[in-house]
Image (cartoon, rainbow, N blue to C red):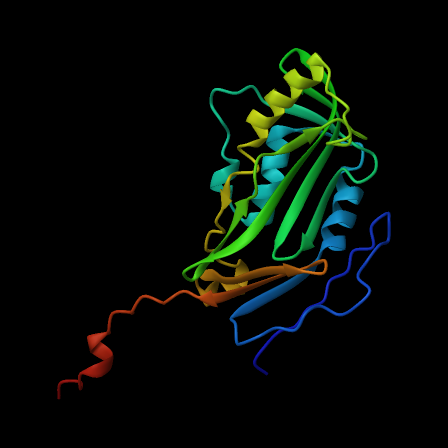
Length: 234
């Protein structure tokens, strides 16, 4: 009578999933979501496997996901757009663990203007921190940009062409994987819009699960209609 509960599944091509139930929710919330990393990874493989993605398409997809273009995804006016040919397997993957998350984009080829570059994987690691009532994700160090199969610390070195591409991708993906990600308040669509603005209050990860909780923002007071409170004149 007081809540709506929904469970969504996405099998995807790998068919991988969770081996146990989601973590329990603590406290009362206007809205809560518990997402297993396999949902994101299966969906990404089904939607992006081997796809040639123009930067504007990636931005549009994220805008659909977030309801608006995140500030950290705004286009840079002084930069040529990139086109990425994504890997056939695991084109985009996430890992949810230990109060943070990791995102990896695997590109088989990159094109910028008239220049074409070989494959590179780009990884960003984040730690979730609470700042007052507003959780945020803080990137841990710089981006990890390496060719497929490259093992950092193994003594292997990048050739000059790979070094140039690495520098270019680091600069471009800084706009996507910002140093801080602060989720913006959101308003649901349709009938749910009546709930007003929702503010993120809890954000955490553990054992492959991401949990997010929201509260309703304070509602502005409605002006009192005098005709409804004063007695009618005789």
